[in-house]
Image 1 (cartoon, rainbow, N blue to C red):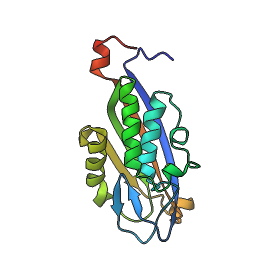
Image 2: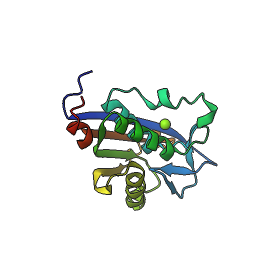
Image 3: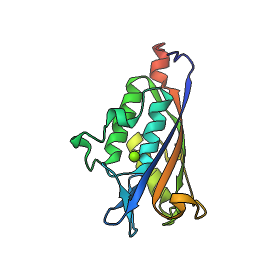
Image 4: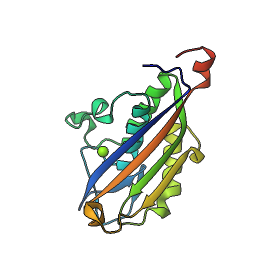
Length: 172
Ligand code: MG
């Protein structure tokens, strides 16, 4: 793998099913709603899409490889803790986040009132500025499964840049 170029880009996607009796957690924020996302972990689809984009940028595989849903230790896992681990991994390899751009696709509830809190929470975990995290939200215009409120999806593009420490050392 040629990592001499100082920038790497990755994309991530995730979707989880909406069910009763689960909290709705996106970007580490608990959003009041009568339904929540089903999953082995806390089912934070936005955070999962971010992790896959970060891993994808360095061709490191996907979160299923690092945190398999068959492993009981990830049952109910706080996805922000997994995100911190993925961030540590890319830092070990000499990379840091340039910026993240994300989209949440949800028919309901309204996501916009929670975006500032999500950016702050994710930025704190990733040790970057909220300005480096874009979060947009859209509905699916009542189309398909997301439009029928059966699930919520998230997309992320991540730009990673070589960290200045590793550039100084001339690592590739
Ligand atoms: Mg997921």
